[in-house]
Amino acid sequence: MIQIFKNMGFRYVLCRIWHEIQRGTGLLMLRFPVHKRPLPHFSKEDWLDHNIHFPLDPARTDLIQNTASSSLQERVEHIRRNRFRFFHNRWYTVPDWHTNPENGFKYNKNTHWSAIPTLSKEAGDIKYVWEKSRFCFLFDLLRYDYHFQKDQSELVFALILDWIDQNPVNRGPNWICSQEISLRVLNWTAALHYYKNSETLSAENFKKITQSIYDQMRHVADHIHFSRNVVRNNHALTETLALYVIGYAFPQFPESLKWKINGKKWFETEIAYQIYPDGTFLQFSMNYHRVAVQLLTLAIQVAESDGEKFDDVIYDRARKSYHFLRTCQDDVSGWLPNYGNNDGALFFPLADTHFRDFRPQLTALSKVIGDDPDFKPTSITTFENGGYYIIRDQNTLTFLRCGTYTNRPFQADHLHLDIWANGKNIMRDAGSFSYNTEDKWTKYFNGSASHNTVMLGDFDQMKKGPRFIWFGWIKKTSGFVNERVNAFEIEVEFEGFYHLGKGIKHHRRVTKSKKWHQWIIEDRIENAPKHLPMHQIWHPCPDFFEHYDMISSDKEGSIIEFEETEGWYSGTYGSKEVCRRLVFSTFSGFIRTVILEK
Image 1: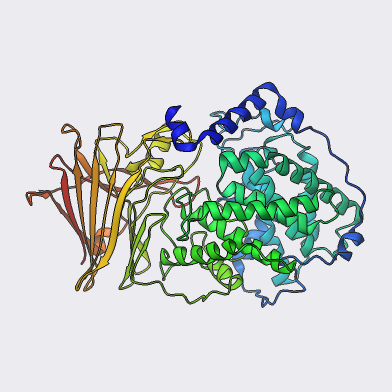
Image 2: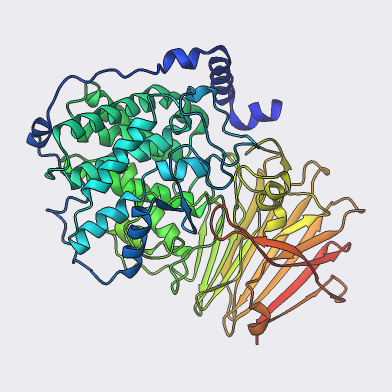
């Protein structure tokens, strides 16, 4: 508890305790009643008279219609058959809004949301219930309507209205998470604006949908204190932006002006806090940073439509985020390292590209901020606030992280090295798999074992606590990247493994040749317990040894043979596959590994 106070702060602990008291005593049930608060009457015509502009308005877009997208047609056919894509990798037939398609568990839709546990072995990963209710699939239907000129309004509104009927206010699993609510409402709002002149959007349907949007946003507004003080990550970004956007999009709501003003102010505060001055993100996750990028893009577009501007920090952090992510991006594939937590989030899927391809989202951001879409990163870059060191050379990308934790870590992945060559991730991060799974999978994917770094025995760099908590945060780090005549070099060090002893340091030097595709990785451990071996771990791509050689030695120059152990790779959330995991071990405290293209 002392470490939690020290790491997370008094406000976090106090708010967390107060939240649990409210849950346990039933106060949350009183604060979030299970009845609607009737909206003052306003008609669809009243709403249209305000002439609110919103992204994706078909009358204002300059997109060229494209009827060649067979993949888009296929996805729409799936949706028509009540099949939905989960986490961009699997299709499930989902008959309702409360069943986990992975294990068949069905939540009671009439249970107050505060009485439903989010972690349950019987229920499984609740994200499998939330995924469909995000309504991100609406964009496939809207895009299909636009490109193929085939009206999808009946299907769109049938799905929205069915959700409203089957998810009574503040009851069931889909009312638990304010971020899920916010995203759903944003997606519904996009659909309403797209079909605002459609006959399918009758007066009755309009009233029912706007009433539900109002009920859901009241929930978000009444719970925003928890997100801004306890969660404080991409959840808070989504929720504060939703308050701003809905306040703008529905001026007839009684609290609209309040939501709009507070949402704008809080979104600015959260962006300034969560995106560091160098453009890196406090969640240390490429995919969650993309979520922030999508939210920034929407925020700037909506503000421009309203004739407003955000504080300068919004545009500054947006521009620096673009530069950071672009620097970490492989030029051939458009992919980034699978670094940090990745729950499969892609909020507004408006392209047919692979989920891991960041080009559509980064291009969209560059356009709204007026930045150069052809921005070319330099050969060597350091992002000091986030602790990222990048080398870009000869169609290769060398990515390493060594940063000080001022915000909570999510994985024990310090000094992880990602290597890309000719569009292929030859040394890769194993991914996230699932947030609610067996302990062995949580230990592997969250721990050091799934990263290209060093372990001492079977111990992680930090000590794992419950859920997303780590103890013994890494606070002491140093590093630099420089250019020599024939090579680029990254040199970094951190002090960690505090649960094993004092003063334990891991020093890593990575040398990338300018002449050819060669990397030399030198790892040195200081002050480690003598009985624990040092393990240097690698996760190569499947055909690595067809194109590369790899040789390791200890400090005496003696060759170290690798042991191939069971490894796992999760390219998308909820999926995993066996992969090669190479481990070089020694008690000497030093390993030198050379990776060289054949």
